[in-house]
Amino acid sequence: MKRALPLLLALAALPTLAGDRTASPGLWESSVQMQMAGMPYPMPPHTSRRCITQEMIDRNEDIPRAQTRTGEECQIGDVHRAGNTASWTLRCSGSHPMQGSGMVTYDSATAYHAQLRMTMQMDGRQMQMTQSIESHRVGDCH
Image (cartoon, rainbow, N blue to C red):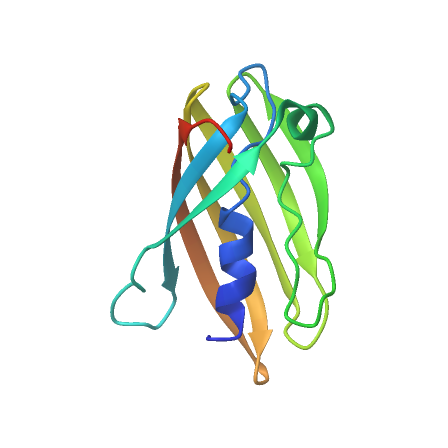
């Protein structure tokens, strides 16, 4: 579980997927609540900040491209956008292979909520994880 946390937090730090409603460039703060099947309680929320530029939005660099602990990049596919929502799939290789999907809904140009569902192979067994993400623009990048 500790090995998966950096990867999962990396996903949450990427705040936007462009749809008909896009995010505003600026400094975004994301709060992530992760739950793993079989755990009696959720992990404490984690908060992170990331600067998003208009160029990043224009190049779709805000679509999650997580890094595994070994530096292998996870592959994003099947990106679908409609109105104020976007969905995608995720597949990671390496010592703890993972696959899953995500969906983001923009509440406005300065706020969104998202959910990621993943299955990871760890120590010879599959583990189910869900991340709930709330993000909002907190100001300009400095």
